[in-house]
Image (cartoon, rainbow, N blue to C red; front, top):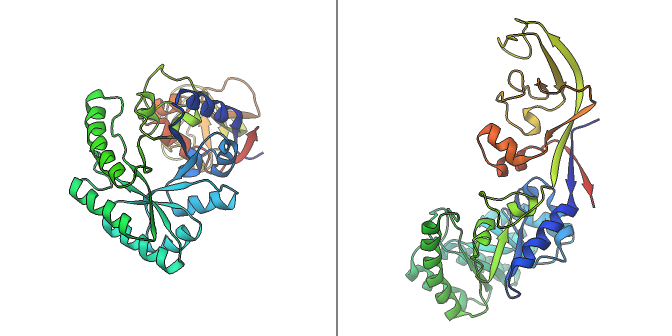
Length: 339
């Protein structure tokens, strides 16, 4: 029996419907399905959400093309820079591209001319995260003007990202800066969709024209809050290979690790190549091997164990965040869907 990821699409749909109920009718809902829908399977998740959400967001052109090939015909926004080697496919498949400067706009316009197609673009505006995007009002005006003068560009959106949505001070600073940019964009084209918030901003009520929801869809919150209740959608299950009795002083797995007392270990067919970290943590004996983990906290004689059933709880053990657990934990797992 292989490692399997059991993914409850019903929970993802439930989460999406709860989110949508909180949105004003005129606010669009963008489902973020990058990184294989945070490890849950982008094609399956997107098709399950198709009738609920307005559009989708991915990180790369390849991710967007995969959605197109799975039958998704709604707008798909690529959230990072599209490189020259990706441009033909991006435009050919009708993806919506992010422009972080005027140079990007010029490249996209040239490709649109080559293919005789209008290219949908969203301009990225930097409101303080300093990751990507235009950060100057005058440069934004030039970019907006360039879009208006190019018959191969269709300016559909302007967006930014909140660095720390749970902080009122940080959030207010970004909202104020983005509001100025929004007014400039609406002055050029009142139909431009202006969006700032991912899950954290949504929780804090910063809606603008659209929200981009990622982690909430998959059952977790970006910070501690009681504002919205969601259900986790994935657990990863691995088969038990054997049980071993270690006497005090016995070695097990790589290196010099010794049992400090008589210990029973359960060997499970899940290693760091399957996604979770090599480092020993509570409930394990020694570091993970590439394909096997030795657990000390499995008291029952079972044929399989859940190596991940709550990403937030596991993230605390590894001193990381639920996002990282989700995108890694099912790398080699066979996905099994509950619909």
